Length: 474
Image 1 (cartoon, rainbow, N blue to C red):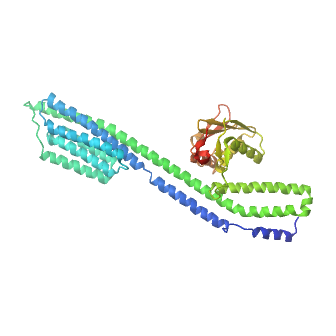
Image 2 (image 1 turned 60 degrees about the horizontal axis):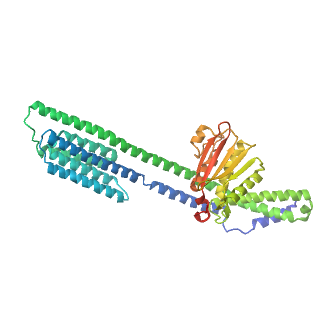
Image 3 (image 1 turned 120 degrees about the horizontal axis):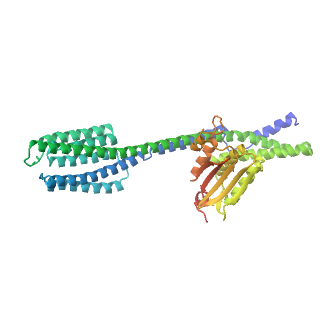
């Protein structure tokens, strides 16, 4: 035992050691601001994701397809009425309207291809042009008496699905005004001199054809529009989920980095004390006590390396977390370190990677692999296997165990926070971090159960991402 005076002197020396000028709370506060600003930037990026523009682009393509359908339908209908039914129509002027629609469609295809973004107002203009073309054709073929006036409802329905309320009502006003105008100004149809009953039957047949055409087009195009909207909603939901996961990462980063800063002070104090104890003659003479002090110093150095690793992962010690190495050297050193730290000799390492590749070691990746190995070791103390292999341009690490395997719901929610097979609150964060770190490296994580017992977690990592300078030599 040291006398009180000696302990006080050593504690005073440890408290007066040089530092970087920031207290741990100050450094923690600065880190909190940095991480929060990164989270805000991600939120703004997600909020500005071009989901609406992509949906509007798909819907504009549907309107262009509908216009082609209208062109074909008008050609068939005009030809049938003029040549088959013998009802004369102004083919030149009606053909000019069809030509205008074709020109509009070709121009729209070129315009959409070079347009950076498509707004709802532009969808409204497209629908209004279609209403104008329909009005022109109805004007030339009987006006409001033409049974195909029901096609106005198709435009209104599409507007109600695609546009906001204000734009939809604008389209409703245009169609109503067009219909009223067609009751006052139109070119009458020169029907052949037939009995009233036959004229009536032609009107009914036209109404039936218009109804069927309306129904078919509505089902086809509204269904496809709804599919576009569902895809947009699914994309937004995925973005929100990603934002929530990023928020979890930020909070855990704050907690881990703050704890690392706070632990720095007592660890440094302990390091100074142990160093002074080992230089004291009375303690150095006791062989058993000297061995205990050496073991304590080794454990203390491991704690300091863990704290340093946390700070490196947080980006606060750039240049200390990466060093040039190779795939084989990196994985072999990782296996040795894991075995020594956990006194575990049940980890079997198999390397079938083949020709070695130069990469940069990464502290975060090492912690990720440690996490998966720890999970496997926790449920399978007698056997854990790490297989390193190459698949194309990817490094694949497979960690297998003989534990109970993953529950079906765990496999379905792999990588989601707070979904754990260990049955404790707050569990599941390990695999959540594994999935997110590997995803940041451009890789993927999969898990599967074995037929009899055990499970395998596969980490697929692009060699181009791990390579020094962003490229690698095969």
